Length: 269
Ligand SMILES: [Zn+2]
Image 1 (cartoon, rainbow, N blue to C red):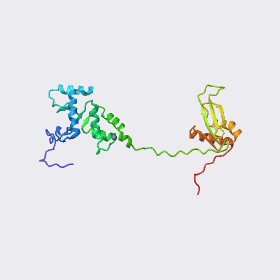
Image 2 (cartoon, rainbow, N blue to C red; image 1 turned 90 degrees about the horizontal axis):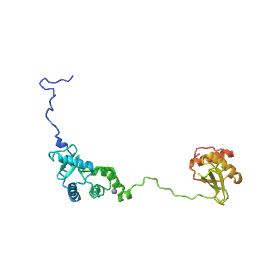
Image 3 (cartoon, rainbow, N blue to C red; image 1 turned 90 degrees about the vertical axis):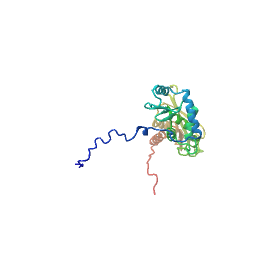
Image 4 (cartoon, rainbow, N blue to C red; image 1 turned 30 degrees about the vertical axis):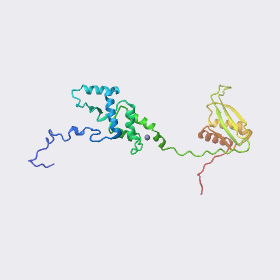
């Protein structure tokens, strides 16, 4: 149990009628006390001029109308306020639909030397310290996506491309073959695809009727009867049917030929 001296109050009314943090201290005062110079000062002047033209997005224009209908212009609505010709949304200066003005503001935060072309989110953070307009995030993303220097300095995240080595082709006939499929053919004797096997040396070919649904195992059986029988086992079969297809094809062909594939560890001491 807490002991309390009898001459002390219970503290229930300590904060009564006392506002510890004045509301105005909490308001965001963008650019307050900051001496603006150079391009930003010009931009602010132009923002004021643009506001007088009234070229605003409809939701903004509606908010401004409501704000100006209020009894006193110094009265802040929940989110909008207007002072010295500047419209503010949640304390941030609104920039009207002038593409040049918006571009210059983003450029100030993104292109200057000290900023060193920061990324999307950092640029958004810098711009949104003082400014706001609808879909500002999207605008900044587009700005950075088309920034010439950013595009040129973009790090390449892919592994470097290796050198292309031409395939070594044997001098003997039917040692190196290329295998491919021609598919979606008009149905002929129940076949709608052709498996082509071409000898890389003589350029002679076998065209074997088959189906589009032929599996790697099925292709191996066709190969056995149509290619292996007259020409024997090739040293190399080139195919762009995908590594899985080629692996299944080879396994089945070896199986049909009675060759046993036994895998071991890659290196023996
Ligand atoms: Zn950039």
